[in-house]
Amino acid sequence: MTGADAVRLTGVTHTLGGTTVLDGVNLTLERGAFVCVVGGSGCGKSTLLNVIAGLDTPVSGTVHVPGGRPSLMFQEHALFPWLTAGRNIEFALRRTGTPKSELRARSQELLDLVRLPQAYGRRVHELSGGMRQRVALARALARGSDVLLMDEPFAALDAVTRDVLHDELTRVWTTRRPTVLFVTHDVHEAVRLGQRVVLMAARPGRIAHTWDTAIPYPRHPEDPAVTAAAREITRRLHRELAPGHRHAGAAATEEAVCGTS
Image 1 (cartoon, rainbow, N blue to C red):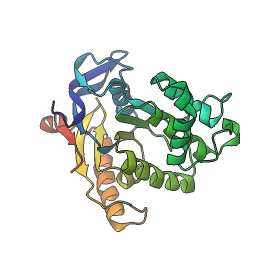
Image 2: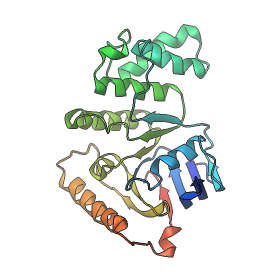
Image 3: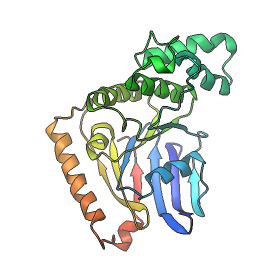
């Protein structure tokens, strides 16, 4: 594992209830990369994140995350409703050992980063769905990890809000440059966001293919290059989902090296 790697999975296999969910997965993320994972339901995308986060232990293979435990962000914001937006972020900051005297300023800095400068004293029920996810992103960044794992964080939002948050996430990533692994069912979202897109196939879960989305940022939904790449990935996804489809043995052990170049 090189010093430039933020995450490396080697031959990772994991089972749940006697079913193989991940089968010999090899995946490498370079520091500062933004990688999106797509695939059909049940292909092991969320399990992949759980294994990287240390929430699940694979039955075989190795998982290396040299920067420590990653931060997690889910579809549900999971904010504490009895705390304000600022206090939710401070809760995460306390766990990193941030001095009490710095909590307010650091929390406000993160709210400024996600463009919610006036939200410090607002409670969760006073925030829109998009605002809640921005606070959740700020709280994830507050944990100080170099790796951010995102499990369909915008899936429950309306299309307009989701589009805005795509731009916001790209801006935050460009500013802070964490390593991001973003799971989604939406191929177009994956191409809009990721430097690389990894397609997972099921029966059992494995890396089927990767694409380098060499499209300049900022990317727009109507960009012909985004649409063309999404169409290509969708065609491959449909082939993987076809009844009776089995990936070639060599491809089943393909290593997805997901970098920044």
